[in-house]
Length: 543
Image (cartoon, rainbow, N blue to C red; front, side, top):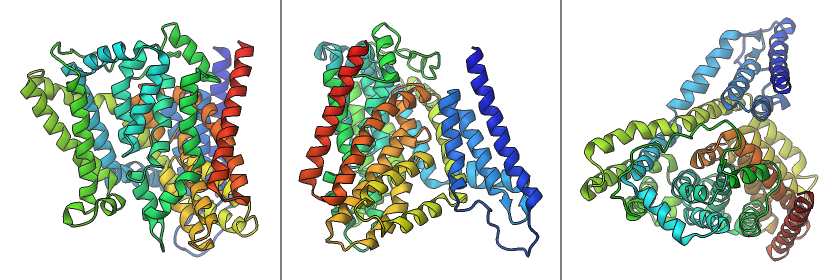
């Protein structure tokens, strides 16, 4: 207890010191003519400081909300240091207007929140109707082992490739009863969900991620270019292989090993932090059948896809591929999920497993289940706004421009690292490749294989950083889907993600000299398999 207190105290003192240093700049303010406002720290290395502080505090103190809020305050403080010194009014104005209010007023973000809430309501409906219970009983008969439960979770995640948010929450709600019955920790479940969300979507041509990548590529066919990057997207492909290997061979290491040992002894959480522990404690109908879980999920998937292609102009004459490439994923998911909710309520009432009153009671229950995710997302979006105001994207763009021409053969590996660090610090993979890809495309001819490798390295680095970052929305969704404490999910996932990242980095070093997928991918797979076998032997020897 004493040690824990001292670490937290040290962290708080460090934060206070940073804020005092920021405010002290007022003493050195220079007089000058009034100009358009710009922070003194705009487009400098300090623009990445707020998310770094937030992430470090989250891992040290195990407190997500306070850590993110401190990062927001530091970001606002740095932004408020302008030509005339520090202004506390500017600090809080930017936190509120550009941060909390601006992000909650953003149509994309509100679409995601609506989708989250509606999905939470549908999950509660399926639980109340007894569909989840019936599926769990059926799955217990069909899935006989922990290995089978983990592989089944992976398989379902691979099938839901349309969108990572949708993937995380759907796979979690369907497979949680199965993994619980086989004593798989919530941390392991969240890792499998996370590892089959963005890594699956980034190699699926029909997904919201393919649409996002296609949208930032100019001067060539974005979707065709995206498809060509798939064999070189080492982090995504190797992550998928790793999930299969650790599930099939029972490989656990790092903090995850402790969580898995405790789960086999009956404790699925390991720590006292259990924000979702009482979510499923609702009355369950005894009339429910497996179809009461499968059909609502199928309806939801189908209508979300329809909603996405609708926003891309499919019903106005566009082809399915072009409609998907040009869709508004957030609006499409919100629209499709709301229609699915209405259809599912009608279905449960026609089936007479739920009354109208039961269905209406599920709405506030579903909202309450999603409150932790919505809070973390709101803080993460606000922190991202502070980072954007400080010009982190401009700073990174300058770094890439300065090194691109000098280190051509090492460029894929460099871009992978830059993408990883930027996505880790900002919590957004889409924002990361939105910054990097427009810089890279003009550097190469469209027929140059190095262009494909470099874009793949950007995508892989963005997914890796997103996968590791505590402030990533996908990571937040994965911990929500697995109903795992968010910091537990991040800390147990990091060693697994970093293992794949190290192998991917070596693969991109090779790809810089030999831009051939038939060479790079097999070599990278062999390295990953060898690394996992060595890790298994070492952990077994220690045990």
